[in-house]
Length: 119
Image (cartoon, rainbow, N blue to C red; front, top):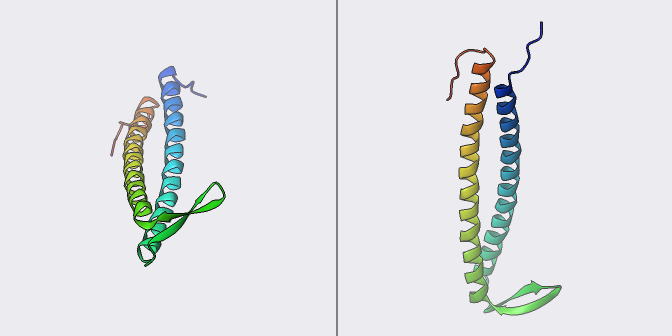
């Protein structure tokens, strides 16, 4: 005997699927930002340890001589911005995980799998 899936459960399953796709997208964005952050931190540390007054920046296939202090300021700002963006994505991940747990619990409840339990 097969049971038909109620429309409410179908809707919740679709929402859960959409949330999972969004979560994967956010996780990928966060991973990419973390790689960029690591690269910026490494560049900043290497530059900071250099005793030269100037560094070279690659601009459109050409190296340009730039004051180290200017590049340091830009890297510091970039690092702060990346850290903020990563924090925002982490918050979004956390909220999505909570929402997915609630949806899963509601689906189990509606399908007769016992009372919904949200941890």
